Amino acid sequence: MGQLRQLRAVYAGGVVAWALCLLLTLVQEQGSARQVVVLLGLLAVFLVLLLWSTWCLWEAGRRRSPDRPGDTARTRLERP
View 1: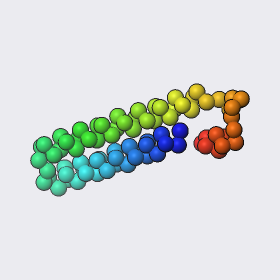
View 2: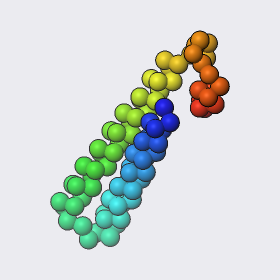
View 3: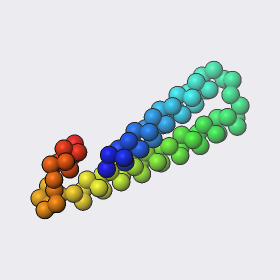
């Protein structure tokens, strides 16, 4: 679960980075159409991956119940 949270943070960082790159390219008007399309594609890919990882975390959280017999102190500490 912790690794999935880290992966989601990486995807969120990628979304922010590609959005900033795209914004700077559009504001400075120095980028070609090809560059804008590539940046839009990368932004779209990272957005999809961010949504996927968020959905996986949400599903994993729904499946866990606090009354599980195998629930240990460590897993209770990992919960938000």
